[in-house]
Amino acid sequence: MSAETETRSCSRASTDPSDISGSSSTNAATQALLETVKAVIRDAVDAEFERRVQQQALTPAAHASAYMGQEIIYAAPATYSDPTLKYLWTLFPTVETKELFQVTNHELRGADFYKLSSDYMEGIDYPTPHSLIIPLLIYFQILAAHAFASGYDEPESSHLISRYTSTYFIHLTWLIGEYEWPAVLRYHMDFYAKRRHEMASGIYSNWETVDENLFYRYVGGRYNDTGRFGAHGASSCALKKRIEPEVVALNLLAEDIS
Image (spheres, rainbow, N blue to C red):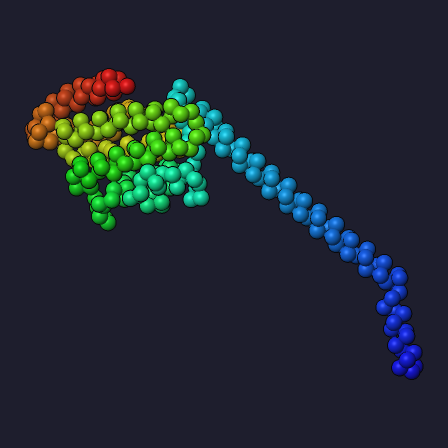
């Protein structure tokens, strides 16, 4: 075969209508397949988004059965890109974004309260009431501000949170005035751990209650030098007689405040 004949043969092969038609069909099938895959992915993403939205909207109701008779306050959990978190940072510029995120998502450990204060020291173990009271007040302020700014619940939610936490703060200061600080600190840490778990379900009202089990375990009878009975000397029987009226008194105090 001459070079000219081979060239004409190649030319005919490259312009064969049947080849072009087959190539077009393949391209069309591939394009259709890609569009189908894209549609499936879009539907899956939309379905997942809708599922998460519904899950978030139903969160208070889903947990309500565990706390029958208690009011649900639900402040939408914050994310690092959430405008609410940026708003909180303008209100609390000395608090790191990481800590603001942990507070609003109820992930801040009791041992890390000190990080909310601008004058905290690493490894602090709350040697005095003052070392806890200041960051605790900031913590309560962040909770109320977040409930107000999130816009998820009714406006009065922030007022309710302020009332509940203020009642607890009064309880705490009364305990500090009567009992040994290490005992009060242990009470507070366990009390806070319980409240943190509940707040994730929208329950804030138990801040204004007295946990009698924790009181008996940690605080009862451990009076400080300025407390009502002094720091020393009481038989177990006498101690029990003293503690029981105090629990009653604390509960009455809670009722008066609320």
